[in-house]
Image 1: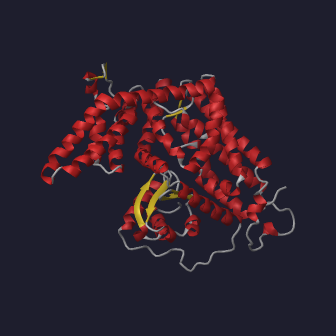
Image 2 (image 1 turned 60 degrees about the horizontal axis):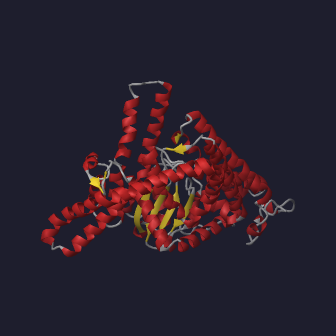
Image 3 (image 1 turned 60 degrees about the vertical axis):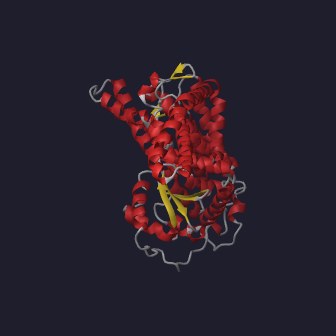
Length: 497
């Protein structure tokens, strides 16, 4: 947003129904995530029209305003500060009359309908569980990004032989969080599932405590960190169950002493003697499977992963990948899956560029693409998905084709031994450049990733330009609207034949 965070928050608040309509506030890397009391009080059209709002997304019970990286954090803090104050006057006016609907407006409305329909489909036990798991890991992303960039800088300095006195300090700063990530996972897990956060962290801390090397479980000595974030997640869930059982049975006079003691004791012992070994086996299997998948079947696997990621996002199933990414980063220092999945965004950018070129007479839709394309290049794809490709139909499918091509490109090089990884999750597109890692060196790794992006752009553009716009005329002409320049006699860009 091209204004200070407080002004931006003040403009947003009345459009989501005011302070009384906001139940909870959170944010991730790009989105302000709101739980609302009454969804019908949100004024979607006015909200999307605010400068700096890149799009809106409904994901189950949360209403998410896409603001972009670097903006969403300050705006969220200002938004939280306003919630306790008197509602801000509506800056747009309740009586403001909307202008004649153009193509972009109708596509945005169709995108909103699709988001609402997807939100209804997402209210299943499985998807609610995946969202809760995502809510455990999403708050960790800023630290993962910061530490990942520092790790990349330390590796670059080490390879170049520069500043040898600074490199160990950067390594320590980048590694400290990862060494204790299990504690943060345990804390967030207990908070999300209704336990005491500090007890969740205390139980999960045993996973990374160096002294577990003296413990033998099932005849095998344990290793500090065995089980990683999966072990911490399981330990904290167990701790929440034990804590709730104790609180429901113990009288108040004993609760304050026995509940935390029994929570740490029971769940801690079960973590040491059962969960760490089991979670360690699962984590090792994940690392082995990811490495085998790309080194053995890299091109076909990359094609499938890159091509299916946008549909996974639409179904809300991409949230299941967050623990996998975090496990790989904790175990190997980087995730090899994210750069492949990031190719889906490249296909989306290419598809949007093709729509922009083909529909050159449609000023409203081209304006939407111009405002959303920079965010798409940086990996924020929701504005293009919900404002352009998904409502149009075929461009969404051709964007998937572009993502599949980019994924196959990156996967092919993985088969040749040039693996591309990311030291953190969250960013994609160009924003992933400082987080790339690979055994072949930074420049080769960067070259493969850029090659994948260019392939995704090119194939997404070509597939959309030649095959993705056959049904646009039906979309654009489905509702009457005031004549515009694009509707006057002459070539009709909305109906290519």
